[in-house]
Length: 524
Image (tube, rainbow, N blue to C red):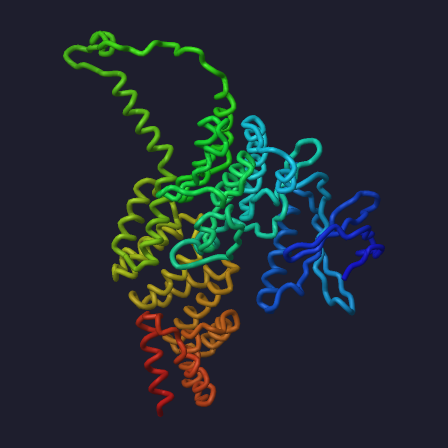
């Protein structure tokens, strides 16, 4: 392990060990007269190799993200600040040098101070919303906001730290958050929203955690200490009676159960904070006294010829339509999420209805087109599936390689259009870094070549599919057919055995047929 006094990279002199927690140890280092923090990944804290590799990937991702973000509320990291350090006794150690943030975390601050005031809450929430606006605009989201991960500097600046769980908002990621795919689970009980427990975090998950953080700051009590009502809303307001309704309403909206019901971006939070900041001016009496008698009919209605126009009614309708227009993305998102839940419950008719309704509110959500396409395929409506996957591809903001993979498979299974399938599948390969999806794309390309008896090309793609995902039973089934065609009986037998181990829950017609074929081949 790294020790004080060592010189790393011919640059960083280790001064002292600061602490250890979770998966890392921290040290204070001197970089040509500037004090910085060295973070070292502790791989011995992980038992399995797969977990170690995931920890390294997240650590490297933290380095990349911080080097790209430039904001006073985010620790500064230079592009070459990540490096590995090899020692005979400790092996290879993964290191990251970053700006040293002077001050205390808000968790430490809470231990020594009373709950914050409304004015301080507005000031701090504005700072953090500005930080998240920068993070989200760079197409990242944090996934682990809580008092322990927010530093308060002596000058009053808040700094969001620990970007080890950060996630990039890519088309691939959002598609994985669509039907039937999951991401990495990052949990901090009391601050983590429901969708994140299901490994389906979205940028609005940061707002939920931020809302829970401010419940803690305003009340002095951990979010888990509060009861919930029947709608699973946190009953926290009695713990902060001095907080006025506009700020409390905003915090409750940030903690809404469905991401689509939360503010959809940091700008909306900042606008509502501006309104809440002016809400504290007391009003001694209403500007207009309440009317205790029926109004003069002529005072509310103007007449143009024979037509009476109630301007108050018209204004109300226009306001309602305006609210519907502004809220339509949130409504669409909530419907899409509800449709996903129905899909996973195999209630495909309900899922189809909700996806179609979501598209009425916002037609350009590629993820919803992708989800609707997958649902139509389950219902046997292949023309609908083809149309919706094509729209997801044309939208080009989310789900493109997944939609390409699904549509390519449809061209193989339902339309016997091998040429269109292979063009589409090959287009999808460079668009994703998801190894599971890459494996499936290679498998489907190999399938096309098997159908066309292009066994050499099929073998290349199927072996690549298995290299990326050794558990891909369909790839083993197809490779068995290729080896059989080449006369490699022994090799084919080994692949047929792996094919036979296909998940029995996979009821796709081709997998069912291949599994049956494997049983017959192995019985001979």
